[in-house]
Image (cartoon, rainbow, N blue to C red; front, side, top):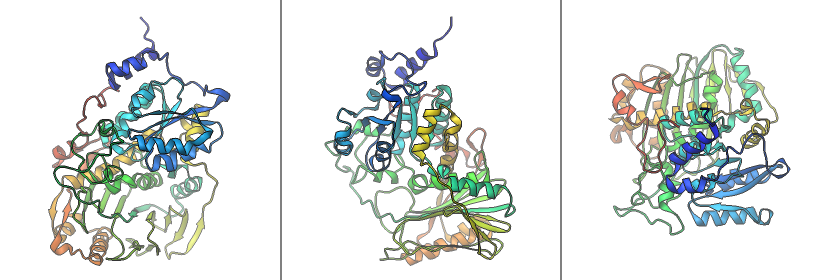
Length: 505
């Protein structure tokens, strides 16, 4: 007997998404809605899932301005957030549908794609469910909450032949693409090291007692928690501060790191995960409910070259509103600098080569003496415009950041967090001993010490968390070696029923 792939897709979604409730909602589905856009006037009909902050400020606003794109539905478990977004849409879309439960939204036949900006713990499940329901997906960074579910997203995109774009927008920058081609063309010789950093001010999230924080009455808390544990709110503010707790967020390396580490991996031409990772840091400057580090230095080792990634959440010094500039010295004595005299974030990437270096943020090439050689420019579409372009063409090759690339780059962030989470308290001297003799890495330790000292933190007395050097089997996406057991326990999470990603998507 021949199996109807449409029926199989629908059956899997009904079983995995929802049990009887979703089954009733989706029983009328007659197959995937996608071959080419089928809306009136050939419009692409899109739904925004997760509307607080970035969901409205970026996703919704961008799609509303695109010709040939109709925002037909909005979804968020917070009714207040939904109401604000409906006002933002305004009279131009008077009949827009709203949902608090994504399963009900995915049952709608006339939605071609979803664009998601939910909290991190919902990224993977919403993507897998959408693929099973015949929808295409643009998923916000970090694409996953852990390494395992990122691979499930890759599998779901392939199995259901869905367009799934990781919303890591640096690959949409055509000037950066020209810069990467220049680097890989060997004009500056071999890549020796890639530096990347995110210096972004983060204040204290406060502290609540055992009873937990107050859950807003406007929210369906069960739906908000989804795959994550449901219990008393472990912080004062429900929204946004979930970034700094492990059940729902991935810290700053997971928040902004995917963009920058994707650019690093792209410039290096690396197609897999690094062979090892080691990290150190801590949460300094205040005592709050945050679990993730606000000072975090991670070294990823590839065969070709290492990537050094630095996070700072404190200002230039106690009482200052400015963030640090970036200053480092390469192994060959090149001065690497990014001047910064602002309280705005200082983020970037520098590729250090034998005969010079490249600032990926400005697409500028420098020689060994720091003299500017050239700057690349080019017009570009933004990431969401690229997503729509791929939906119109039906070509996976038009996706600037595929789900696979999004998964791999996000997994570097997860690797850094896992090393940190299985780490132990250590002294500054122990950190120097374990990190090794590479002067560039030792310089990063010293830069961190000076930064914290300027904020009243003495690492010699306070100490830090030092993660072990974890080795990775890139093909299996599993850790190996001495610390493999505790590390691999963090490759996947425990899911709360019925919000479960199955082994076979």
